[in-house]
Length: 329
Ligand code: AMP
Ligand code: MG
Image (cartoon, rainbow, N blue to C red):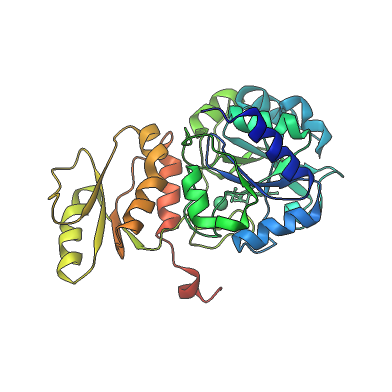
């Protein structure tokens, strides 16, 4: 889906005036502001309810613009940018003087990527600068993968919503820190570890989900309203039946290859076996179960290879203790 030229122009004008634009990308919808305007960036944190220490991603129009935003680009970063941009890969590099500390949560590093979506690229080109954008949802909740999700969640807090259709990848970008001796995956996402290793020519460490590697993150993130409980794939239905007996309104993410779901008994979503299809639909499923007023979602983890690594990461985070339970606010 391509937005009209007049909409792109309007959105670019909103960015120039210090406003907020929700923009489609191939991963999820972003909440964008002029990456060089600290006051506009402050509005992002207000709109999301996000702690200002939690850094944002700077979106640029092409790999050739990278040196305008960062310093000390190592060879590995050039290789990765060349192979995967535009695409769902975010590189963490040393901040250049153009990037205000407001965008990096006070860090001397900055996260940068080139989105692979015609509407995002048209907006970046019309605007001419960088657009700093986290996902266009309230802090900690499920990322939006359609323009309607954005409107439902952020409403008037956004000055303009650019509709680019449903997101093709559906989970956030892979974040790779290239400031150290060897590149490190900070967050699995739309570019797989296997693809990264193929380009770099050596293995990469898988991040431990239990440890908080990326600054400013709560244990719980990407979370629907309903509590999420993870069980073995073969036990999803029996656990759901048990929880239902205990009086819960249970939603089920049922692996397609694990038996027939008793369709009338619960809010059941049959998740696709193909990881790309599952990733594309995951956040929509979680939103749908929230809309059906489930208070509990029973799910299992997919195989943690390829895109399955990102899906498992999001489900684990969704199942993590909520801020009210950890006392961390
Ligand atoms: P979001 O788009 O909402 O997923 O947020 C952007 C993600 O990028 C968050 O997970 C941030 O913690 C991460 N991020 C942004 N800048 C940096 C940085 N300099 N170092 C490490 N992670 C970063
Ligand atoms: Mg987010």
